[in-house]
Length: 287
Image (cartoon, rainbow, N blue to C red; front, side):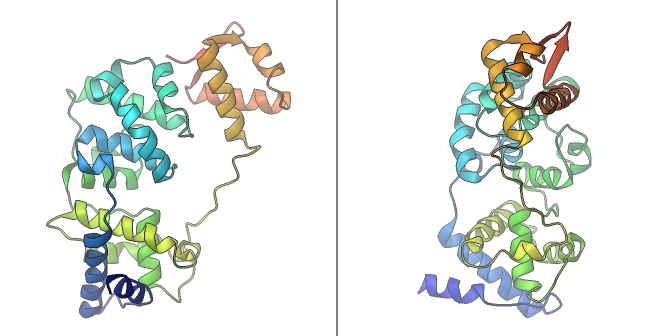
């Protein structure tokens, strides 16, 4: 019976200007979450630090992979202080398997800023959070919501999917600015944390049942394949340097098995990003 009601609810289209429709939409989300809430370690034990780590991990990595890596990372670096004190190479080593290694550097820099500039206490305001490395507007909003239960409006891929599906069934090129008023109108201001958890869980569930509504979004883009990409080469180069600690630049390039000009360009980018350091022809992981 419950599953039938959920499947029936999937097909419903609502008008954002109709209070009854808005209330019915909230009912679908609340009922879904009451029955199908996903347990996650960063939800079940909430601290600002755990929220920050999980949000940066989840930026570009699927939940199952983060579920696997998050406890290991937290076990090694349990708080801002331990992360700030660690060498970047150790943080990057613990991050391996999550991809997009710049996020590990951003997280490391964020921890140092929290410790050095904020007495180890994460600020609560999105306007301040957005000034930290690696934190955009959406992530600043999600941290404020999940760490401090503040009723901040933000949009990410699952939230976008839910609102496009139920409120923009016939739309095309839908901007987040079109969705924003609906997110603001429907938010549970008494408990925004749980409301956003519900939206995101429902969005994940919805993705397995309907053609991706996010294709109607003006902001939609497909992630490029990993195999053969610059991202794959960056990952291989970094793993080697984490293993060897330091190596000659020319040896690293020539032994990569890839086009040498391409590898030079990728290494230059990694140095510019602050992941690597090069001096006198020797490359190491940055401090």
